[in-house]
Length: 361
Image 1: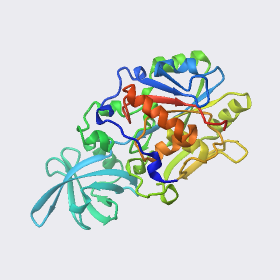
Image 2 (image 1 turned 90 degrees about the vertical axis):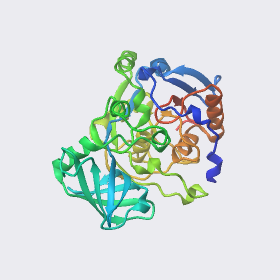
Image 3 (image 1 turned 120 degrees about the vertical axis):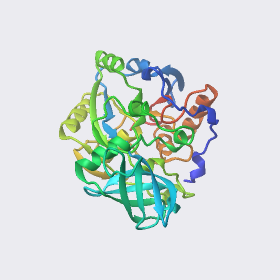
Image 4 (image 1 turned 60 degrees about the vertical axis):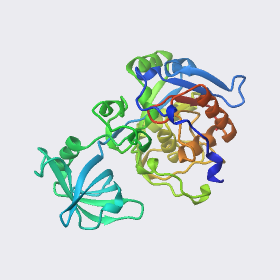
């Protein structure tokens, strides 16, 4: 399909720069293709009433690393400010990263992150540029390694906010909490599984009282979530691999829910992609540990997930393509048009939608 089929116009003022307070006060657009009421305006706190006893809800428990580092590159006495987002650990002292602006960096450059000149937690962290890629990728060799490097990154790093937020304000101390779900446990993501940001203790208690069980999977959200689709046709887009796992206990519990007639609600596109990656053609969810680059576009046959809770996504993005595959492209265009007219808040810190499939999975 042509990528421009997934385009729409969003007024800039609808991009949320902070989450709702409290988190479960966010608005929820219920999308039910073919139903008597295809679109309904609710709040996230209404979610328990929209599910049935015996259903299961699946969360991604990945934890966002404070992976945004700001530093200074000095070459031949000339300094330049640069920022990097750590994307994947290579070994004890090497990280793959995305640099901005990458054109200011060359192989062999030294970069000092933080303030001062001491290479330690007290002031700064230094690294050497070992390699550069065509899309702004750089390999960093840090002077520190192991746990000392981890501590320095946590001390000096900031939350890697999406570009549409970071371009309008800097990350601050509040984002260390706001941009992390209440379930965050397994560190390794460079972006939050944002549908999970809406959940609170009182909402979880209400879901438990409703008889909805909870399960956790892990998918470390990678840098591909920030990158635009540059191809003109979806068939030419290559997804970045992301690492995840589904435990044997979780696979059995969710298969049992399906066998008893319960529905599986994936919280976020990351949870959905991992569950679908781990499901056999016969509909059985299997334990999983490894990488997935599953790219879901209209025409995909969903094997396991029955409903999806997700935020509103960027135009022409792989995530909007996924929700279009789940509920239908025309349905999602109407849903987004309704959300814009009703002044819903969009993207990572914005409101959510609860999607039912265009046809039964």
